[in-house]
Image (cartoon, rainbow, N blue to C red; front, side, top):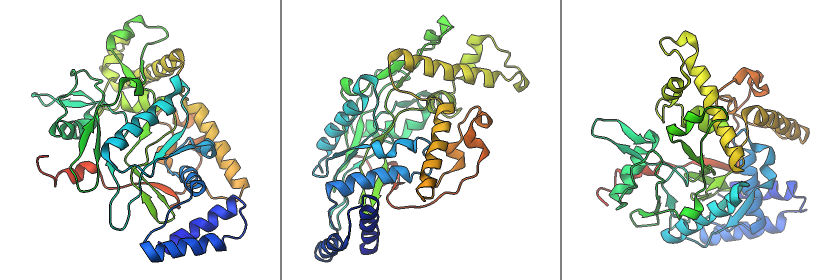
Length: 365
């Protein structure tokens, strides 16, 4: 830890032009020797969170890394407090549709006490109910989390394809508890189409804020396992993945039927045509609702701008090609025609072991 802490303190002092870090290094060393850990200052926490976003290999939206707002809630360790502050995170991130990049950081892991964990992959997720015939009502990705919530005592929602799941929060030494998200914390957008009135019969919707909640924020040897973070959606995340993937909502056949496309052979490119219209629907609907969303062409250009800015500052930019390149019209974007190198850097957002894997060892709770 001492080595990681020292490297981070030097990085912070260098980039923020704070002068000689010797005094801070001595203070950190003394804390670690006495307690086994140390506490970041507020300025260090904000800097670390922002640089962790800058270092995120899989994120295309890093141009605005230095504008990230950080809510310091390190004093919160109980499950109810985490749930209430997470709901408040959504409210402050949403702002009536003018989405802003926001991170809320809760207590870190300590040598003698693990920090609380949020089991949900994102603060807002839709339930996936397994039917007797083996099919799923809702989002198949979340069947495990839905089952865990039901085992915790959640009575379930009305059974629609878009029931908002509760938060599952686990504090040290206790089983997970469920907490319903208040209605005023979850903004959803009903999906319509700019040309097809029948689109509303599909009954589609999606939530406005993509707040990741199962990643650990690591800064200078300290792990903050509960640090929900959001930017704003790129339309393809919803229209080309969440709603279109065959192991998610698998909506391309239904859209193609509504469009009257020939689905008898792939050579008609019915999937491609349905996919474009589904993505048009997402962008149209978010714009109509006044909710921030970006498109893959714009975001690709912004990422190239980010690369240029960072290179001028002498900083290497890591990226995972398979995540940076959009899932539709890839070769029509500038990010497609480049190669990238993944770089493991600190600070960083990293995946800690899946909470649902831990659930298997808890029995009936």
